[in-house]
Amino acid sequence: MNSVFQQASPADDTIVIEGILTELPVSPGKQNLFEQIDKHYRGKSVVTGMGAVVGDLYGQAAAAAATAMYEGQYTENFICMIGDNVVCGTFGGASKLSIGKHVKAVVQKKNKIVVAQGIMSESDGLVWLGHAWGADEEKMANLKIATWCFCFALLCVSLCIIFLGVNIAASKTVTFFEAAAAAAVICFGTAFWSNAAMNALSDPATDVLRKLGFCDPEKVNLNNYRYGIVHGHALLHSNETQANHFNVHCYQAAINDGKIKMCPQNHGYPKPDRVKDET
View 1 (cartoon, rainbow, N blue to C red):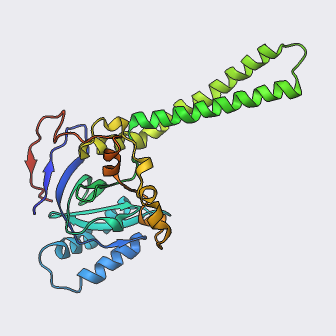
View 2 (spheres, rainbow, N blue to C red):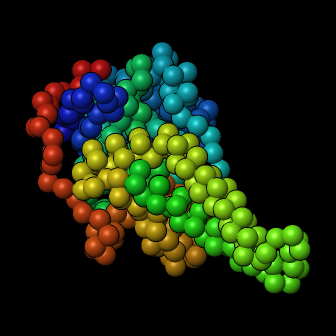
View 3 (spheres, rainbow, N blue to C red):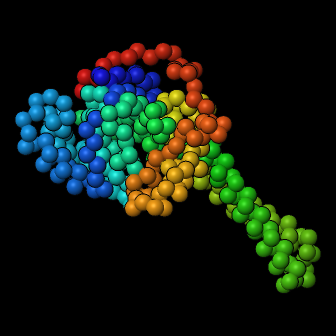
């Protein structure tokens, strides 16, 4: 099946591809991955498919692909074919991508390579995402942390006033409110600062979730539906580490629980022109 691209708006640098996923070399390290690909494909007389394309990728764009990938404790680097496009990337759990099944991917084109930002397998009910919650959920999470920290600070202040007393020049009430004001500035100020800093992750994640078809992507939070949580019991009896499932999320389970919804295709957007990738 040939893959197809959905044209993105000028403000976007990500596009959607769809197709059958084939050819999936996976390795914890970048260098090992390219050595694996080189050894497997260069020794064969392959004139079509991944053999030819990966040969070109390794020979001419290996440095670019290596830059797009990264090493991490809970990650696996991979290169695969989605339709007729070579796609590379880094996900904890890339080895769980389903070979031979139709997938939908949000990718970013960098030079001669296509880098996966998110991949969805509808038949498996799984989605591979580096950051699995939208902008509003990110803000809400930071606000909850700030609220808990503020409440804990008030508890500590109250205990100090009760058991240690206060300066005789100030009443207990004045001391309490002054400490509460200081705690509020620190806790909630840190939360707002964190929101601004986390935009670098939550905004791209929202874009990916939207293009994969999630309704209200800003409010999607799949953190509690990580593969390691949903299948935690089974994983206890396996040799898998977090690198084998860290970025895999069971979005169908979240749908079944009524936590998220999928939108009709192109919901809220004009129907895009669909063109075959020529790279």
